[in-house]
Image (cartoon, rainbow, N blue to C red; front, side):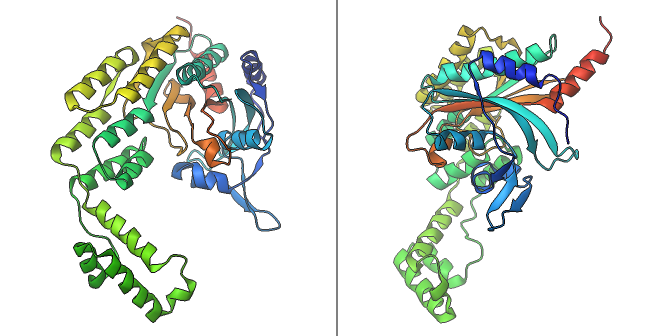
Length: 376
């Protein structure tokens, strides 16, 4: 059994002072919410099992989803702040598959900028209290701004969804940009007759052909989708295969993703990009600028913070702010905004949400390294 770090109780005391209600989350969790919403990076590292009735279960891989489920199940009102502490279980390359996390989930605060600043400040203050004198570096990204840039370029909805899904994954995003620069115009795995109908745009004819093929092969009786639905999906795939960004638009997107600037200069850099690129990003930049002002009002030191336009975190439920805090080359805290998650989990109304997690094993290691260094 992994021992809880000695400073864990101190962290929960700090969270309580910030009016965060401690919650208990069971170690065994239903697997489907994580498999559906956590993202590919986490999905492939989950420890899965089954109940006696065949229900898919898992060892708790993170806290945000179960904290939100608990909030919905208990019909708690908002705004509400929750604090958690416990082990999470993930397959990791270093072999340390079991470690402790602590964090805060802030649900229902309608002042988005203030709540974002609150989360960043709470994470920073907690790390500073546990590791006094350590030099923290914060990296901030914003999925809302990225989505606004993608939308302004006029790509089909399917391509916009693909790019947004890839946000924060440099390899996947680069591959998609490569595809957009050289449209293939082909849908893989189809025969010449289907390809000809796709080329002509004859969706009705394609539906009839698929209907005949399904009847001939006996597939019709087991099909979960109708010939018309399959034809429509193939037409959508063909449109995505044909979609491409011209060289100028592709250069605009790459220029945006290359933005990496001190946080104090980020608002001006984004405004200059928007003006030069000729893109209307006013709504997204208004939210971004309000967050910067809220951070300054909260007394957060922006001098050690950078904005990276391409920075994201490998969890699918993030929708706006994303951030990480590191020291001595290790990420000690990470978080962001997840405004759509509670609705996807079953909440009847949208609930704005933001939160962060602390990796206690990394914090302990950073403290050990710091204590070993001779005083200057």
